[in-house]
Image (cartoon, rainbow, N blue to C red):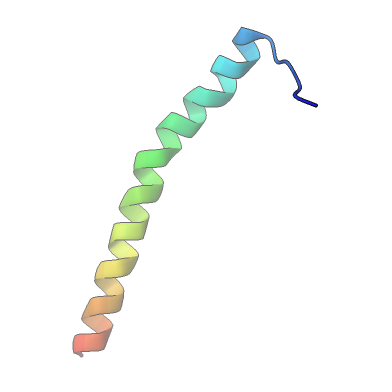
Length: 41
């Protein structure tokens, strides 16, 4: 069963996710850099 959401609710949900996604990707990049630095040390 698919739940049908009104468009305005869907837009409200999708906007914060779009804002969070670049932040999450930056954090992942920083973690991968930190891991490689700790391995080199």
